[in-house]
Amino acid sequence: WYWITKPITIPSTFNGKNVSIQGLRISGSGPGNPYAAQPPQGTNLVANMSANFDSTVIDVQAPGLFLEISDLAVATGGSKVHGIMVRAPYTWGLLKRLYIMGPYNVYTNPQAGIHLNVGGGNGFRLEDVFILYFGAGIYVNSADWMIIDNVRIGKTNDAVVFGCLDGWYNVTTNCGANEIHIRDLQAVEPMNSVVRIEKMWGYKHVYDNIFVEMGANLNQLFLINGGLYEPALVRNVEVSRHGYTLSNVVGGSTPSRIKILRVVELADSTPDKFYGYGYERGVASLTGDGSTTVFTLADIKYPLTDPNKAIILANVLSPKGVAYNVYPCNQDSSGVYRSLCIEFATAPASGTSIQVQWLLDVIT
Image (cartoon, rainbow, N blue to C red):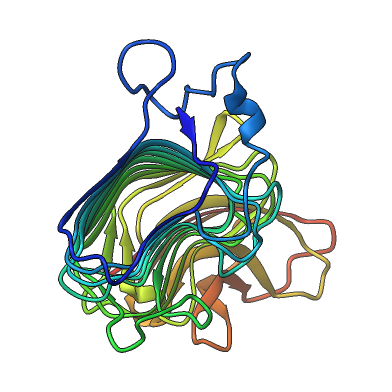
């Protein structure tokens, strides 16, 4: 891999059509996988990594390009700049086999590893890309179609962002992302979310095979604030918690704009939670105090807003013979029920062990 040691700008006055920015692997045959590839030791490539700069490394401003950027290692030292930025309409691009690194342990918005601010009439394919240390790994202001394939993003606030956010050089009159397919995305230690959608219109979002390695407590996997004419479809998510807490699968003001078919949470290497979209189950262990009749069974991940769509099954293992009712509870300010509660007709005696198996399914 060649490290870029000077910024590259394709100005808006450029009137060509085909642009290719490529590097070559120093040893071996052919380009290789950026996940495994490291700059060969004993060469000046490692030293050149310190020659980063406080400006966007590759800045494409010219419209109407067929763009290829591949086989490069990019490092930036600026806390509010991007690795690669494309900000011109009618651009079709292939970005592949890239290693993009921001300043160590800096997760500053509006800084992105790859920033696509391209207006209308465009399409991009990103494949075999490694991004580390940015506010957002990939930030997309608009796209007519996009494939994100086999991408690893580590140490970011948000791994992938689709949206119109202040301070991100936005074309605010045309924020939309249609026909988006994410597959085989690995998000390592995200600080805020894995996929974030902000004020974005669009349709046909499909996310397949998302793998999350948590390195801190995480509020949500998906943060959805507005937009999307039809819900995004997520077909498989696997989360390794490593002892940390995942508060919600979906957060934001419009959580119903995403449908998740399967999520597996791993406590280290052992599956401890499994649920699909609107399907959750568990066992609650509580203790009576002689006066309390209402207990919280569990926090739920699904953003339930209509309790009439909840199908709840409960099996009280103990105490036996006491009438009870199980229902969604703890409604927050956005109208989402965050928990399931059980209410007994009479308070279980002090010290009584309360064991309840429960299952929640939701009509969608």
